[in-house]
Length: 227
Image (cartoon, rainbow, N blue to C red; front, side, top):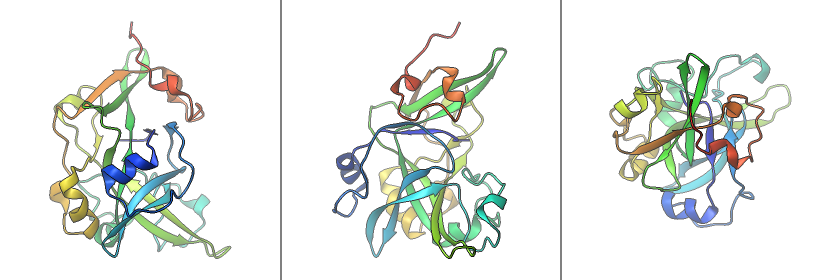
C-alpha cells in the first residue's frame, strides 16, 4: 500500500508538470515530509476540459455514506486496482470521478527480524512530481449540512524493483495517460505497475513509522545505513 507520502512541490512545478489552468495558488505551499491518511492533500481534477488543483481529505468518503464520518472505520485511502471497479465504496467514483494526485515520493515498510524497516521511494530521474491515479467524491454531512471532498490513491501489484521491499505499489500514470484518466476514457488497462527503472529507493529512519512524526522534518527522508 501507499499509506504515507511526501509533498515538496512548488506551485510553479505543479503548473508546469501537470498543466493546470493558470490561476493563483489555492493555498500557501510548504514541504510536507510525513503526509498521512485522513489529512488534506492536493488533487487535480478535470473541469470542462481544464485542470484544477483541489485540496481533499485523503481517504474516500462516498457520496452515499449515510452515517457520520467517525463511523467510517474502513481504510479507504488505497483501493486495489484489481477490484476498484467493483467494490461498493469505489465503483461509483471509478465511473465518474477521476483525479490525479501529485506527490514527491512515498514510504513502504519491509518486514525484517528487527521490525518494520521504512524505505523511501522517489523518481530516479530527479523529477519533483510523481503522479498517482486517484478517485474522488463529495459527501454531505447530514448532521451539519457541510460538504467535504475526499480522494484515494489506487495501488497495484509491485514491479520487480518494488517487490524486493513490498507487495504493493501506487499506480503511477505517465503524462500521456493524464487526460484519458481524468475523462474516464482510460480504464483498468492503465492501472499497472510502473517500469522497473522508474524509481529509486533508500532506507530511512524508523522515526517515520509513527504517524505523529513531524510532517515538516526533512531528516525523515535522509538515507541511513542498515546494520
